[in-house]
View 1 (cartoon, one colour):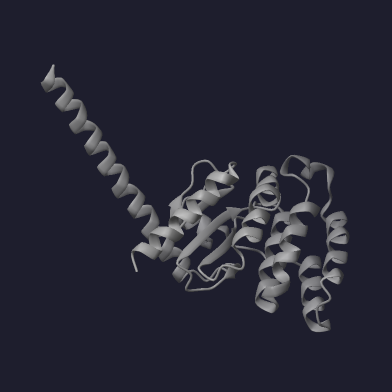
View 2: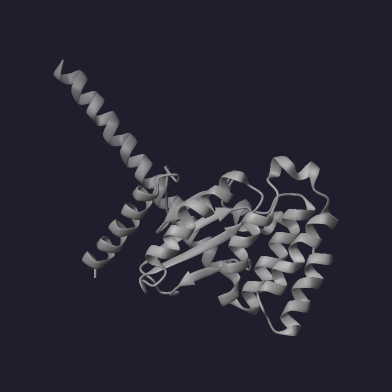
Length: 222
């Protein structure tokens, strides 16, 4: 009986060890990919923050819309003014024109005026149709719906004109060069805290607790 228990315990230890190694590999791949990518990665917070929260999402994804409303806005409220926390959003574009427009416009705005980016970011989640409703929305109709959102940002004339032109004539995106393709992200939303993938992303209290734990751990390791 004792030998059976010993075998079971040894198996559990080996499994946990392999799981830990796999998580470390995933963490390193994520950090390396983000550090070397040419893709625009919008963020708030300090670049040298000790805790980095990374979201992969898409503006048409219904779960991402809910995640932005229920989780991301609360993270902003609780942690945006904390100099030790950084939040990153990585867009995972779908293969359709409306998704392409959203990716083009949002990423370009971040390069033009990162302080205005997050306002438009949340508005696009609200304005975009759900993926399941795309057949009810024409590209032309969505373009006309998006243009007033640019006016609301009160950008300088050149920046506003650049975004308006991108809405009307978005550039083609190479999906195979994106971070999602590199990291085999096959569904969204996905959330990482310090390169650790979070399993339960609908429980804000758990996510907040994980963030605070990460902050405490980095303090101890100083």
